[in-house]
Image 1 (spheres, rainbow, N blue to C red):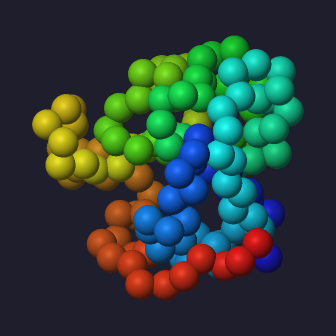
Image 2 (cartoon, rainbow, N blue to C red):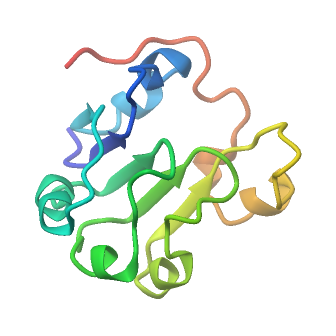
Image 3 (cartoon, rainbow, N blue to C red):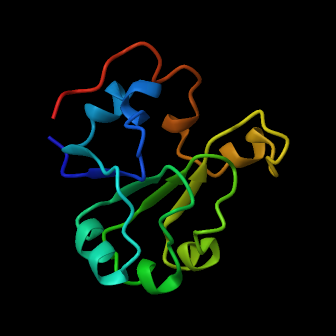
Length: 139
């Protein structure tokens, strides 16, 4: 069993686990935890997220400036809905070897074509249809 943990943030509608198939992820991680609230206090946020290697930022509510990223030594992957998230200091994340990844959207504000973005992702993540059709593991 993997020791990787995933945190899904700001899911106030409790829709993240229903909106996508998490089964392939659930098979490869020890936990997928969903948080519906937003913590703006840096100390409390670091306390909550300190044990996670993967964080999914559902919206731009939770900020990830350099001061937070510096205090999350386990963090390896920070994902966000959409192709940009101004709440994440992407340059600092890159300097700390934290991969930042976004999701493709049909909205006109998308700034980078999916093919270019996918070049930076792990090949396992790029496989089309990889997560469709199965159910997440209960917690």
